[in-house]
Image (tube, rainbow, N blue to C red; front, side, top):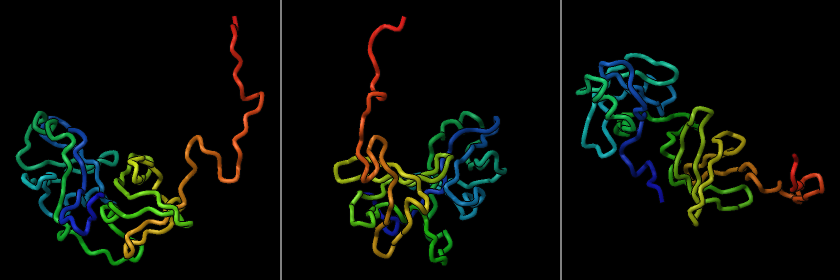
Length: 195
């Protein structure tokens, strides 16, 4: 089971996805609502917490944060950091006062249930691949489903009870509930030579 964020004292704010120029500036894909917030909470560290970086923000370009990291002063050193996930201590982040707001890390490990009680598994990942946020749900057999993280699919985030209530989209290849999958003569391909 994925570790719940309340038990984890560090949160990932972004990941290095590339370089910009020759002076060691990196492109960071932000996991914050405002890309500039990646550098707003103090020093960042790698996943292990062993290496710490001071961030110098240079701006935002096409949704990526352009920044310098302490100790990185050339393109080769910056390229070596591609894939580096940048974390901050949870205590450095502001408390959330809004009722319907949460950190995505708070979703990890939550049970995923349908309104009818169907158990779909647990949240194992939340990400934004450019077309909107998605959640990854893994069931007890290890099957992974990836759904849009929208109000239509996830109408209720119930942190107090450790669950998401979902109305999942139909799986590709599965008929809608109540529909029978029928194949008519026009659906069949004919074999034979065409020419």
